[in-house]
Image: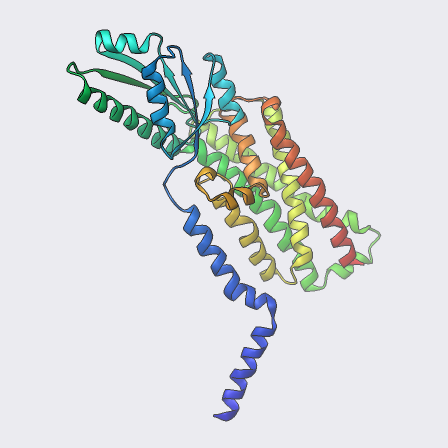
Length: 368
């Protein structure tokens, strides 16, 4: 019994000496519960909204103030005309626009009826539905308060328009999100596992004695995954277009170039992970927690970034799928050109160059 207890004690010492084991046992559960506790929620807040007010009277100002005072919204000011709505949606600055007709207060007081149009981006069907419902409820609440003070009842009609997804199909969000997820899985995770397998099985030494230089070995290993990732992206796009009716409003050439850029970035991540991982199991573990979960949770794919705490919103700036998903939705659903996605593209280019330089240097130092 004494020897058994001594063996158990030794195992505890062994575990606590290994920093990676301690991180897995205690660090990851804490991070997961914090992320899921704050991110996995259907509550909306800090949604950006703009107003197009053709009347500029007391009633429209009261309704505007009532909407903005809700914790759901952040005001992005007033638009001048309807042409600015499309541009604002393409830039991704706002989620919703409330339009007041001209002579709003005069019509409401004289005829008892006035019109408000609620225009939503709708590239995310669930978020848009909740926003429209909440805005309509706020307007209805204002009407009820107004009727309590007036002897003659009044009515405000709200007309809703879903700008890029009139039928509110969820597939309009999930197809672009699936493209991001598949490209990340094929490009980064499979690449890191493939290269780690070569090191684990000892075949990397065989490659080193060949005439190929280390850089050629790296690109030779990742090239098949680039081709497979492109094939997967094309397949998903074709299925989305022909089976689910997903539109492709923007330039196919621009979409192809952006996809190629993201695949290149993901491959650089795969190379980097392969230099860290000592085995295929470790490579899979690092890839799952370093790429898969952030892509699903923190990229604006399933949960709106605006719902997250500020610290997580800042953290999402470092996640490449967030920027690529914005590009995909802008090109595919909104028909946006390069002038609307150049900032996201520049961020991906900087990330790609940085990751490739770091990854290749670390990989070459391991080979040498």
